[in-house]
Amino acid sequence: MDRHRQLSARALLGGALLGALLTPCNVYAGLKIGWSFNISIVALLIASGLWALLARLRLSAPLAIGEGNITQTTASSAANIISGGLVAPIPALAMLSGGNLPAVELIVWVFAVSFLGIWVAWYLRAGLIVRTPLPFPTGRATAEALQEMFRQGHEARLRLRVLLGAGALAAALKWLDSGRWALPRPGLGVELPAAGALAGAPAISAKNLTLSLDPSLMLAGFGAIIGVRAGLSLLLGALIAWALLGPLGLYQGFILPGATDPAASWFATMIEWLLWPGVALLVAATLTRLVLQLRAAHAAGPGTGRNDDGSTLHRALGLALASALVVLAQTLIFGIHWLLALLAVPIAFVLAMVAARVVGETGIPPIGAIGKVSQLGSGITAPGDQTANLIGANVAGGAAGQSADLLNDFKAGHAIGATPGYQVIAQCLGVAVGSVVGSLVYLRLIPDPATMLITEQWPAPAVATWKVVAETLDQGLAALPPSALAALLLAAGCGVVLTLLEHRHGPRRVPSAPALGLAMVIPASLSLTLCLGSLVGHALARYRPRLAERFLLAAAAGLIAGESLSGVARALLGVLG
Image (tube, rainbow, N blue to C red; front, side, top):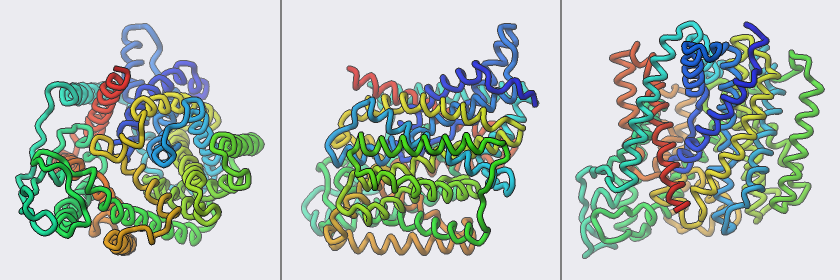
């Protein structure tokens, strides 16, 4: 590979612009369904297609493969900025404290925790990628896309057209749906009699229980990517929560109904109880998985060591600078005691190492589990301090998320012979761009977290999870109603059992416990559409495998990007107006 055509100005600038464009997509999706989208391959498709077009017009040289790697590294680090807390602990703290941070403080904080993750990743690179290489599925897929695009220019242009066409369709439908011409949301046709505590009231409709189909192409795109197992698990979780536990709670009186209108959603009132078993299932499953991964990592022996690129001093200085920045930010912005702020750094480093191994083996970053472990630790070291609880966990989750993203980029770069130091520079630029864009978009979308979040418009399941854990550790489980406590314990047990069964028998025979838990804290309409998208993707992959291999990811990415950008534009116009 030509090492002189990597860290070019156009590669950095192109990655920064794509990151700025796609960061709002992840902020929007994270607040909607608690998930984000790795945009590495999307950035590659767009960048390679545009530069190929300029080359055909004789306006520029084609993009080199090394420049493509720098472009996607910069863009993905910007879009991954939500792992710095923008869609989980930061909004949760805003709901508990009564308001958002000022823009400058929010930008500095998000940059600080993400910057720490960059240096953790560089430290781990030698052990996890060079000497004892792990699969890193996302990074490997990005490397394959890189190599294929620069071998087959025509194929890259076809995929770019599919992506742009799907994006235009999703954006147009979202614009119409959020304007004067709302798309239909058909219910499942279910109607339950009003009995027990609701005796004498009108019947319970499917839309009261959120059992309707959401006309969101973004959700369908996510469904196509997550796969049929997760999609069916979401469907099962939605039916258990909203078609079984919800009506049972309404009849018994420990779940409150909403407005007496068959077209009204009762999500806001029902989620106050359903949140507890959903969060318990999520936390128990992810913590059990984390324990299993720790045991596997211990059995495999240490996976770190001296790096291979002669930059030990640079790594040490960078890690020291990033650690100091995080400690200062905690004390100056949030008023956390310096000792607690200092303690958060080694905890974050250790948990980021665990997350990196999990991502290397499965491709799924366990950021939720990392945050919960850190929250539990903060509950011991700083009992009753919700700010220290959330922010300390934010350090661990943010460092782990950005570290996992860069390790995927390192994996792709290693496959094509890229210079890792150049990728670190690109990652730093991406984090800076993402911190500014992501923070400003979040503040515009959610100016009042206390009233806007954990609603049907903004379900924000990750926010709900972090907030509930912080409140529980502050007040204790005794503050819960007896019915919620029983449901919490039962759901936690189910999360442990399902994860152990999956570990023993493999994932194909066991529902996904995290997906089951997620379905309990988002409206059933979202889960139904996600499941439908996963079924369509599964059918295409089974009956038209070559077509799915070529275009499914591009089409799904286009649907996600198009609707997200359109939704962000609508929301921003509404706020500004």
